[in-house]
Length: 367
Ligand code: THG
Picture 1: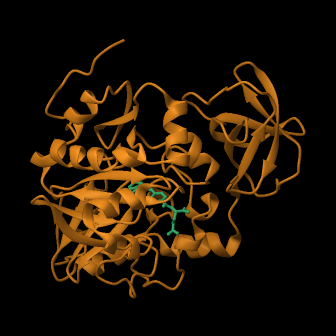
Picture 2: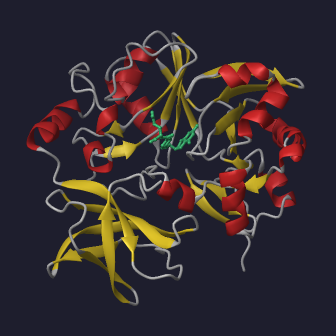
């Protein structure tokens, strides 16, 4: 075992002390922060998410705030999804692309005001990108990181827990919509969102000095429903078909290849970054697509670090980009980023460390 050497470059989450007190066992790094991964019993944490309620320190979902008269303009320039009908209090899942139409991040965009937005980002440096584009285009917009840290409450019992804290109004909050409020004097925003398909909310803490206090409020309110600490769960997200940008994608992947084409509107303004390339890709048809893989074998064999080759008829046709044991399917399942010529039902094998493994291709999501 090793411990993490603290430095000012590795910003601690406001919930860091609370997660240590809970017995945090494993973590990874995301947006140059420590991301809690498990408290020692992944299987129990998985079932708590499926059947009950789980709370996650996801402060690594850092916010990039746009403010000023051109904030909405910049948000649209960065997002090839039509934002013209996005209302204050609404969130939208967006696929940020570079000028070649390559996916560089897949944040949730929150519209806090006509002239204030947050990108709640995945793991890449959008702060630099947004500020550079805003400056190069001469826009009247400030780009900065606000003091905001999400805490996710996920699972079928999450709504009961969050309603017991904030009131029954949370039951009426629509998917990806949010409201700013406070609890015991702690300023927060409460959104129906989260990186699972088991339902739930994210509580965006707006005062980093109150992390332990907010953690304990949720922990205590959740007791009647058996809440416990957890983390974004690779088995559940894979079963549910959620994308992990940077994990399931490489530096040539476009949104159409990973089922995000429905978040690309080809008629957004011509100055939207990447839209010319995306129109071309849409017209030509993407070269690859993303399918599910169900592998033969009945022992867990997760993918470690690198993608693994997928072969058909003796030649490479794609990559297996993740692989996890699914407790509900009792199989190793994964994603294929694979030639568009290969379709569900065609025989493939995955070149794993222990040798070739036969796999069945299916449409996503699995469940
Ligand atoms: N919550 C918040 N910020 C985030 C994430 C989050 N930032 C990083 C990362 N997660 C961004 N990635 C995703 C990926 C998928 C979804 C949300 C954020 C998601 N997708 C649904 C799906 O694909 O079925 C719904 C999409 C839709 O219908 O619009 O939820 O989790 N704050």
